[in-house]
Length: 114
Image 1 (tube, rainbow, N blue to C red):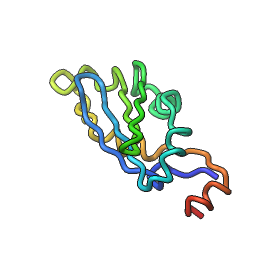
Image 2: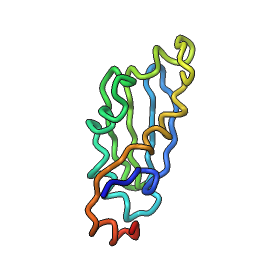
Image 3: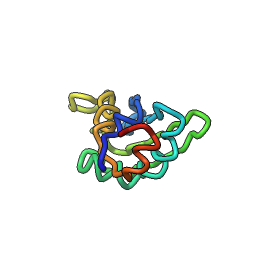
């Protein structure tokens, strides 16, 4: 089955110059291994498409049950240079939570998602 990340995590985002910074935090500890397995830098880059012109880096924070992503060259030059509506990257977290991931029905049952 496919589910949106919104069912597994919450997120925050902001800017570091021309790089959007997105933290994804598991809603339950048992969801974290699924996030690690399914939310790769490559999938995040594909999800955002042309919005992210540079590389996507992923950092694991197991003590927080979280992942942090840096989306390079995604803010049109950054807050003081960009003409983008969201030059500080505040909506990137909501956009990432709309990403759908594939999970087995068995995993969904174990995690209480079915």
